[in-house]
Figure 1 (cartoon, each protein chain N blue to C red):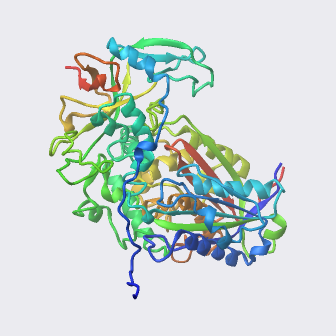
Figure 2: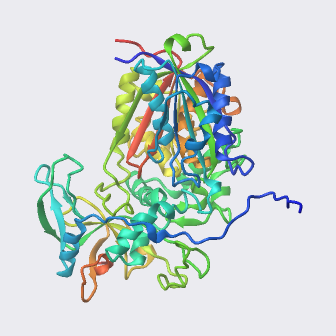
Figure 3: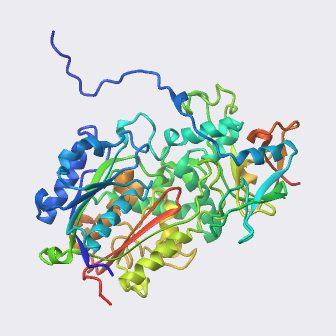
Length: 166
Length: 418
């Protein structure tokens, strides 16, 4: 039996057990999500330099102190940066092997406006999407407020996104 | 106080989609070219530093099984991975070892082989890196639609770079047209560099912007033509002590080096790194540059630096980092760009090799910045050699989520001792 000469290496189809990853989420998230249940955004306050982080942190990145204090901050804020996704068609892109349109994550031809929001009273940015606005309306300095789910469950998805303050 | 050191040999493979060789062969090609250039044999090398950013390329831990090919047996080997800065960190690791007096010659190698992976590569996907973070976001009940925002729609460093470009444009007042000009310059320069990946002779800002495919905006404000490729390639340098370097024809002396980190500013990584209000601020780069210049005895970088190799996978970064490397006024780098000052034959050429925008084999990229600066000083850059006597050159690298910076200053004379 003669061997078949191949220019390329042979690709072997297979299933990769990605479920075997067991990552530990930061425990601090539980505090943030508890606040979400009451439609509150809780941040950490560094008593050394006054920096407020949302989501909260254990150690201040600015002055390296341990952080214990907590503050509730406003759910209104300012857009600090943004980017736009392409208008995705069905079968055009795959995310982790899945089609975002087929999965119902995106509508056909929809463009997501992705924003970094600086909530009032914080020194950090929160990453989310801009709702109820056209792509051409997005700009740095835009005033926005959080859009909460009707019945928050203590999940990150309790904040659906932000919308312009009219 | 450290002793004087120099880069005495440089080796690079052709970068691009290299289906003709495997990772180990690619590493060996660069390593042996560097040894040949330094006129040394493998027996003359005391130690080896090597690095790639595993997870970015398709190959994991190629240094484990490729050691024999770069003459590692019997020698200490260190492996380093710091994201985009990997190559710069590997080079600086070799420099620390020789400067400290521990070793006299160190071979430093950076490599990456993206094409061995089916993933779209480090520039357009990185879902294999973001996967772990994705799981914990899902565990905390994130909405998948919102999770796209963490990666800026394109993921990882490319994601943070889209936000960063928007912030930089807002701060500096530069336009997408300026990003086109940087990208076109990079592709043009790459056409003169035989090791570069994306080569586009005579590319202009207009031809790039109007191109049906490359002109398309993939993540505002970045066009497809603004984004670096996922390349395969390896590069290596030989670092030697003053005594050995004196025997070389024209070594590139290391006059100053610094590395500095800032807070994480990437969204996807555990959603924690969001504290830097302006990701285009990049103060760690300014700090590293000031430290490296002070060590090099450079008082006025604008006058004293002859060529800069900036790590710029996205065009706004060439402008932003040239300001942070103190080469131009804050927010004004687009003015010398318009005037052609940063062209190969300009007053201050930036990335005459084409830079990372045209060639990005992650582990090799920041190493290439040091290697290209060395070539410019040695006068061996061939077609993309800048037409002037290069006395000082600065090599830059960013990594992590644009929050790590390495800066290395090379010169034609040794660092003065004081």
